[in-house]
Length: 565
Image 1: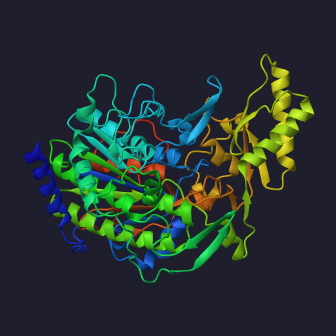
Image 2 (image 1 turned 60 degrees about the vertical axis):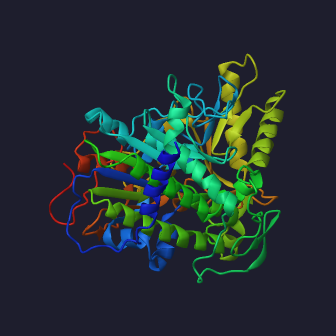
Image 3 (image 1 turned 90 degrees about the horizontal axis):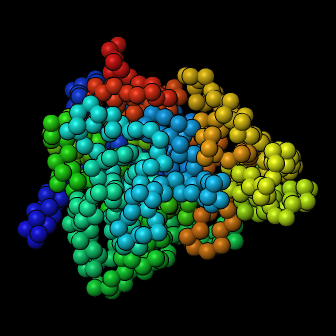
């Protein structure tokens, strides 16, 4: 085992030593049939952030923007702008209404409990007996599954900071699906029935061991990279929380060498909201390319990478923070190195980069710039509405569960259809009294409100956006639309969410979509496209037939020829 670990680490070191990629001269107007498809999702990387920092990028994001095919007006066109639903669209070509991933979690009326999107009792996670994770809730196949159906030699691997980022992009039956496990301080996976735990973890075992040994010698640090990012802004008040906006962020203090801190909850909270979180994911992805010989087999392979730090930084510090500014500089730099390693493979590679959703900055900063931004405590809203309905109908308890975006009616035991109907009507009436609510829809309206095929994402009505997120069983009975610039949450302690996403509004829906390959003759397409267009586009380039999809193929050839065939 020692010689194997040494060999693996040596391969990784060779890749890490590769220079930052400088785009070669243009040689192709269309991508060659790839041996390796790399799909990257940058969690919470809104189109607004891409536009704002585009002129400052010098690494991988600059390479993709200047030498790739740029769809800067991309959309997660649905209303459920959360991590799980957004990731479920990228490599399936389907909206959440078809993937079944309608939210990060939803209320299960039969179980009378919230269900996490990746909860899968048939797929245990090593060391996590109470948190099984797997793709059982994903109703449709992914690109990797389409490719394997066409050629069983095709393989799929996925890496993410979050289980829901990796599993939704890898799909069912992937050779490797890995995410960071806070409790165990390393990358983990799920173990389908009949498979061996050690074998499933084997592709990441050497990386985990090497990372643990590295951190014992020296704890990771956030070293500021971009001097243009504002530093030492002092304390700022967000909700009931005061945050010191400084670079590097205040908080976790690195312990003395030799201290095993890797499983400490405070460290893990700090790690997630730092560029280091993405670096370890990219490093593992790089190692998997080498050890699994991705792109070197008899059939093309898929490597999905979901980078989670931008989301955690955005939640903890805000989209317009100095911390996010510097985090994006790190992201740009590490992607530059990574593209250089892909180019050095000397095989046909096609890379796509997008995001699972956008975001809005902290309400206090948004309000300070002249917009009517407010904070809403979702628990308070649900409690008050539920209490009003309870009192109006003389019930023994509130009949509502979920959150404002997905409200489920939980009627009293033995309630008849008439009472359930009255609960719905009373709930809608109470919601419409609230100043923070601009519209309310029922599940029946959403199921009947699907937009016409091909309708541009930026022209969809609020109901049509909600319809693309609505499943007849998993979705709530009532969906409230909160007014623009509303932030959910009431932060009180460090690590609490001070900014977020999840709304129907375009700042949460708009995301960049970029395609790149070595030698590309790129161009920019300003018209609106959708993340559900990514999978059919990749399938066309690799020559694989798609099942039914909601998206369409995007032409990646800048000439009169087409890559959609």
